[in-house]
Length: 288
Figure 1: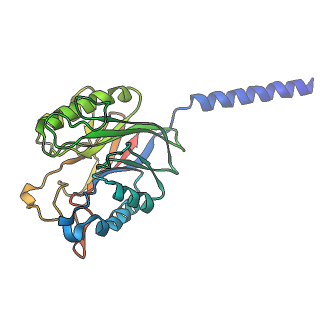
Figure 2: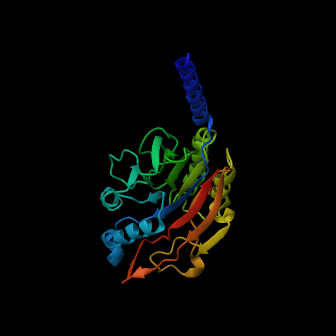
Figure 3: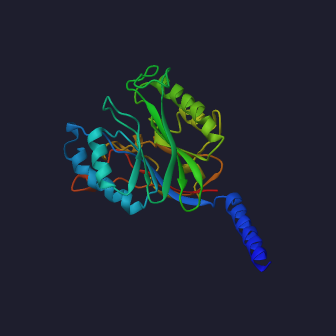
């Protein structure tokens, strides 16, 4: 009789524990995110070629303790270097048979696990690789991933892109298509959208759809409780006139994300070498 009572009691305790674990809500999760256009490796950059700059990038990422990073203009050689230099990060990228520039997502493998990922193209044929959209100069695309924090259970979607540098219509249609394609993910997860938009907030035909089309996003620059750094990102290895510098790199977040800090570290050089021709954009956020 005593054994039966003990067995029943134990089963009840285990059932209660299971119910608690199964229904407990994931905890709020704080993380540091960044977007960085690392600049292609070009002979005309002289001292600022990729091989001279890569260690600056690795040091910056480690010093900032970044959790999730979106990079742009990453060619295969740079991808190999970054994979080796940032061994603590896993990579989300597209299949790159044509060996063009990629816009990969890196995340700390010890903290996050990947649930799913995908790529779509910013053209009239978004499910077909390699098409140049509208009046664009290059094929453009979006890499996205759904990540889960191993400790808190919080799950979110991060997307990374690089809009066209010459095609006005390609940027305008590209951002609309991007928002449409992310809409189904936005109904399931908090969204972090980052990248080089090749447009400033003054370009309402790109900036406003990024915020308001299909579902709402918010500019971390506007939402942050604390700001540091400068108010521009592209500086052309320090050569662009201050009056012409603009913020063209962004991190956007959905409603369920609080923005704690926002920082665009001013460009610095070490013996004539810069990290990139763009400043990084870094934000500390909390997913509620």
